[in-house]
Length: 339
Image 1 (cartoon, rainbow, N blue to C red):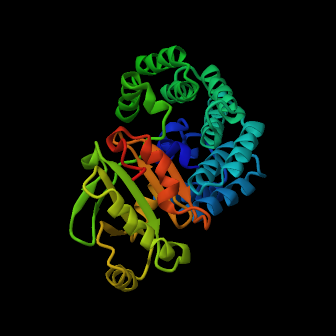
Image 2: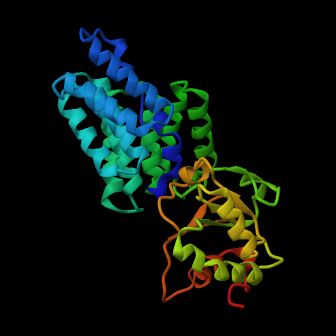
């Protein structure tokens, strides 16, 4: 899931137009109630409630509600159950009766497949095919052209991607989409590399930090919790990291998923963890980086691209050693990683 973070921060925008069911006449008020409950839960981030409501609404339509399947796919993408998202898109395609709904289902499926893809693999080619199907069914929807351009850029098909991006702009998209298109036209790398989402936080030490503020620096994010044994075991290695790259452009930030603030504060003080520490009380930073396990480490280069993601501990190899090759490749640290 982590390979396409942008798609999940904008998932409701990028999959295509999500029409409310009240845009069509429906005779069943129970269905309407459940469907709207699902939409409200989806809008407020209540994924479990949204999924239950859409399932109930779909059942009231004898499991033949394409929009229910599409909305369930959105939920499954949010909770990183990508295979279920793909399955629900296929079910939507099986029961949808109009081209616009089919186009939205194809676009959603493309986004799900793109999240599973690596450069050059079959999922990426399949995602391109789904996005092409969406644009063929509905050429007037700007999002579909942006999605197709994204898949093309991931395959370094820059000329084709530029055509789709320009087509998107010709359709006068909303500002967030237009802004994204202009970014991709200016720097096609944004469509190929894993862009780190910006964040703002106030550390335990009272320092205000944002990723945009740290541009030009290499940022190492340490996602952890005091109740996680491998996380506790890694503290000495992280101290070594801060010493190894002292007085360089490497910034280590530890982001805790603890729910007990006192336990977190006490542990940080006891272990003398004097680098920036942040308690992610509402899981906002972890969610934006799709962190689902501890410990997780990320290396973000000076341009804001995620260059490495490590999950879990390896008893045969220290955290510092696992980061070494990535750090060595960064111009700002040339000649330092081997010291």
